[in-house]
Image (cartoon, rainbow, N blue to C red; front, top):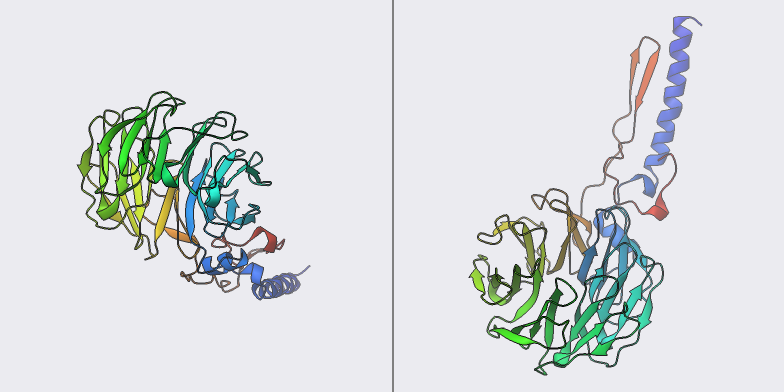
Length: 374
């Protein structure tokens, strides 16, 4: 084949490829979904206020909202799919201890659980109808749930049987956290209380009623934090015997907290507030979230990969410890669609390289919308 015929044949192949790229570019699956489109595809709306999020590793995560919705991902949030919770009432807290075992607490003392990563969820029987606002599982068997009127439930068989534990107050219970099956803390009626026998007996540590604490996080039997109204952050280095106030430089009601280790942590709240520390809370600084939505909860899988959830179907993610956050789902964000790059050809001897559609920013395309070859 002479040189002119070779060029003609290569040009014909090039034009055929360019035509396929052009056709692909007109299809929805070949464009990057915006976070808004991804949220709408899941059936979310502006009333889909996420309340809690749980990641057990870099790939597997779940979130719940006030409409009984559970969404899940198996690829770090590139794609989110809806799971059938079996309930329509408000869900307040979700926690997984591994990629298979998880629980959700919600209205009317409803606890739904899964043993297969959320493919199937089932209601677990509870001895009350009061709302449950928080739960914590230390492992796949031992868990606690708290709610209104001072409600405290516990299980030692993964939730097959829940029983009520005695409390010292009938005021609402908030955050609960354990570092093993015996040692834990709870927010009861504005007080921080602790137990060393799995919750059978509680002793009061601190009257924090003026701070209206919302939740807490303990890493060890000694090291913990509690957060609440007016930017309140309390920290302890001795298991709660003494609590010190840390400076948050904000006055919002702080709602969610996550610590990777004793130095590195994050806190979220309304108005798109995300705070971070790299010294255990001696200093906190504001991160740029890119949103003004109410942020309710945060979960980090390691020191760099984290997720935040909030109002209007908002899920934000970071892969650099929060230096930058980007929306995976949101009904307020609008990111640019990725347009196909100009198709170009380069001749080099007998080599023709086709440069076509750039799919490097198509992380949010739903698995159901993928088209082979695009």
